Each structure stands twice: as structure tokens, then as C-alpha cells.
Image (cartoon, rainbow over all chains, first blue to last red; front, side, top):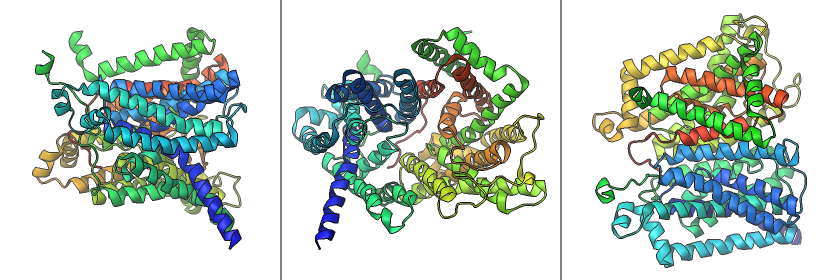
Length: 296
Length: 340
């Protein structure tokens, strides 16, 4: 009984550990998509956060400064996506895919420039255990804060208005392009925290491919969570649970690849099962172009 | 001149060139290398000798297959981001089929390529089925399927099915009869290059001259009108994603039968993603895509010697390719809202 209890507690803790980066990324996705911009680039923003955090922590010896730099890097990359998605009205999915490729390549390039070696950085000063707990708590707090922001503040209402009907929002005096821009940038900053967690809390280095598609699972978590902060957090916990199972069941002789694939398979099933039954923000993914009349 | 610039393909090519040389130069300066040295190492590596030029065409071929597949799906209004996974599984299937199905060259070549097409088509078809049956977002589905494909391939070559005669992470060497014949002796340039070009011609014909091609484009450009005129959009999604995956799968198969002569888990350095850039630069038109594949083949292959000769990490090529994708995301790809 005690052994079983201990195993369950361990599984619960591991679920939280595995879910934390997903929660950050999914919250970033929720904010961006509620404003009307699909953010395929979450993965890239996590990479930017993870890599930059390690660089700055390595240079200054302060993981806190590293984390701040990581967040700024994620926001900067998000600003690139936000600019082309709003001002230029480019296709958000294509641009987001490009963002991911830029981040992956940029981090690999940066590894050689900064650390003089490909593949992985050296070990740097990291947060360790307390930081891990702290960031997990921060993720949960952020979920509550974002929920409050979206549902209970005038700014949140504006963000949602731009995601549902930007034209109506514009006629009410809201600038959809600006609102969307800053929602995407803030979303990128939050998603980058997920990367910071991976490189400076769970580990103490950056290695190529360390985000391993978590940004994509986060996209599924956004849908699974019906575009709400708490829903997305719940979905992230669900996917985190499947990641945690991987370590617990490994001893049972189940191939590790199958276990690693579990969260992705779960996300696929969820995607198919929920499609048509959940409603995305009405203008999610649709570039907003102001009427020429209004411009004149 | 102004009319020339207004041609979409000319403008897009111009933007791509500006990104390549602009960002490339900045990155080289960051790596303390003069851009002139860096780019001359790159072009020297891509064109210097017959065998280097052949390698450039090998890279171009590797990109052309998935790019054609991606273009087919995009034309139907579907974002297939899963070419990477489709290509890997196509390669894996060809690697296994090539070991177990020996025979006269023509037979084993056809069998391995078909195996690749089937595996890639199946993988694309899963996303197509989820889209057609449940309305699941194909972007996220194909992104997930990429990860699952890589894990599955790992499992097959390392797990319990591990081949006794092969080293870790690989299938055994293919029988000679399954190797694609080369078209330039002593290089890795095989008839895969010709097959890819033929496929581009066929696709152009399909897009412009067949009813299916017309329906496919209609589904992409005006889905509502297409539906009202009796085109089954669900069936079209399933077909387009399956075909798209099959084409990427054939590409993976030719990498196995023409280049490596075995499957290994490092088969693709992200060809399926770079191919998105290739398809966009080619304006989703098969023949222009062939031209774009050649240009990106120069980058892919030249990057190796740029790294070796000029000490510029070759990953910068990926940054440049990603930026090209962003810079060319301006075209409207889907007429109406996507379903989720």
C-alpha cells in the first residue's frame, strides 16, 4: 500500500514536471489565438527561450537574468510573427512554420558561435530543484491570471473581441492590429518560459531538439482546452501525465518509443474526437485588413 | 521591367535572394568570416567539380519530391506540414522492402518505390482521414504525425525488430538489384533526379489539364463554390493528403535506394521542412518548384563546404530557409476559414 502510494505520488509529481513547459506554451497559445492569431511558432519560441536563457546564464552566472533574457528572446521572435501576421496580413500558419525553422537553425548556429561546439552547450548555472517547483507554481498562477485577464478585465475583452470579430472591435474604437500584435508578443514571452524551464530548471544546458515537439502538443492542448487558460492547463496536465507514464512504465518492458509517442497519439485522438464539437474564436487565423473606407 | 517585377514568381524569387544573401552575409560576419569567402566556399562546394555539382542535384532531388507533395496539398487548400514524417516512413518502408524483396532490378526498384509511396501515402492519409471524417485540423495532425513517425522508425531499427546484420539505427544494406542506377558514373546522382522531374511534369499536367486537378484547385481556391458544384470536399481532403504523402514517401524511398542504400534514422536532415520553402518559392507551380529545388539544393550542398572551408556553421542555411518561408507567407492559401 505504502509502495503503491509512493508510486502514485511520484507519478503525480512527474506529471507536474512534464506538464509545466506544456502549460506555459499552451497559455501563450491561448492568448495569441484568443486575439485571432494562430501561433504555430510556439515550438520556436520555446527554443528561443531555452537557448537564450542558457547563453545569458552561462555568461553572467545568474539563471534569473538568463530566464529574463529567454523571455525577451521569445517575445522578440513572437514580434516577428506578430508583425507579419498583423501588419502584413501574411498567412499565419506558413509564417509560424518558418518561425520554428528559424529558431531551430538559429539555436544550432548560436551554439557554435557562443559555446564553440555543435549539438549541446556546456552546463551552466541553473535553478535546480527549487526553481523547478517555483516555475511549476508560476505556470499555475499564470493560468489563473490569464483567465482573470481574459474574462474580467477590459483589456481581456478587447483581446477576445479581436479574435471573434475584429471589424466590430474596430468600429468600437479598438485597434485590432495593435491588440493582436501585443497578444502574440506576450504569448511568445509566456511560451518562452516553457523553454526556460526545460533548459534551466529541468536541465542545465541547451541541446539541439530539446523541445522535442512540445510546442505542437501545446497547440493541441489549446484546442483540447477549448481556448481557455484553465482548459489548456488541464489538457497540458493530461498530456504531461502520458509523458510521466513513460518513465513509470518503462520497467514493464513496453518499448520506450511507444511511450514517448503516447502524448502525441493522445493529442491526435483528442484532436479528432473534439473537432466539430469545440468552437475556435471566430476570427482565429483570419488576417484582419482594415476597410479602405476607414483608411480614407 | 515593372510588368516583369509584377510577376509573382519573379518577385518571390527576388525576395528569397535578398533574404539568402542579406541574412547569410550577416550570419557570416557574426561568425567572423567575410561574406565573400563564405559565399565563394558555398558556391565552390555546389559547383566546383562534376561530383560536387552532382551532389547539388542529389540535394535538389531530395527536396523536389516532398516539395511537389506539399504543393499538391497546398493547392487543395490543405497545409501538409507532415512531409518530413511521410518521407521518413517512405524511406523506412523502402529500406525494409528492399531487403526482403530481391529480384531483377526493375522489379525491386518498382517494389521499393511503391513501398515508399504506400507508407508515405498511408501517413498522409491518416491526417486526411482525420480531416475528412472528423474535421480535425490537418496542420496539428501532421505536426504530431511527424514526431510519431520518427519515433516509430527509431523503434523499428533499434527495437525488437532490430536487424541482426545491421548496426544500430540502420536497416541492412539493400540488395544491389534495388539500387537506383546512376546517371553520372561515380556519383550518387541517380535516375531519381529524372523521376522527380517527370513527376513535376505530370503534376503540372494534372493541375492544368485534368478534371481532378481542376477540382483540387477549386477545393483550395473556392471551397464553397466547389462544394455547391458537387465536389466532395471531404473526399478531396483525403485524396490530396494521401497523394501528397505518397509523393513525399517516394522521395524518402529514393533517398534509401539511390543515396544511402539503406534506411538509417538520420535519413533526412529536415528535407520535409525545407521543402515547404521550396514549394513556396516555386509559387506552388511544379516546374518553378523544380527550379526552386535546384536553388535550395545549392544552399543545402554548398553549406557543407561553407562549414568545412570557411568555418561558418551550416545551420545558418536553416535560418535563411525559415526566413524565406516567413517572407513568402503573403500569398492567400485558403479561401475560407479552416475547420478545426
